[in-house]
Image 1: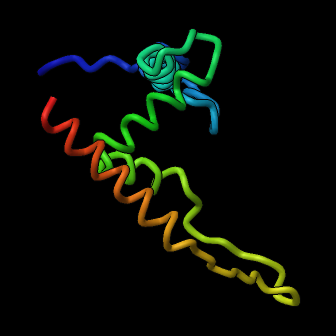
Image 2 (image 1 turned 180 degrees about the vertical axis):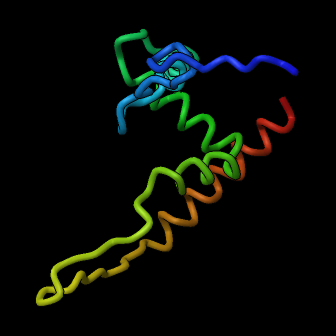
Length: 117
C-alpha cells in the first residue's frame, strides 16, 4: 500500500497565490498593445512619440481595408448612448448631396488606383 504525504500549507507548497489584482491588465497584453500602436504610428510616417503617424496609418487602412477598419471602429464605439430622461438626445441629419457625391467619387478613384497598383 502506498504511503500518502500530507501537502504542506502555504503559497508555493500546493496552495496558489493571490494572483493578479482585479482590474490590473496582463503585462503581455499591455506590451502587445503598445507595440502595435508604435508600429502603426511608424507605418503612418510618424515618429514614435507622435500620434499623427497613427492617424495617417488608420486613414490608409480605412481606404484600403474598410471591412476590418469598420469592425475595429465598432469595437471602439460605445454600445449604448443614454441621456437625461427629462432632456432626451435629439439629432438632426443634414447632408450636402454634392459634397457626398464628390467624396464617394474620390474614394472610388482611390480604390481603382490601389487595385491597379
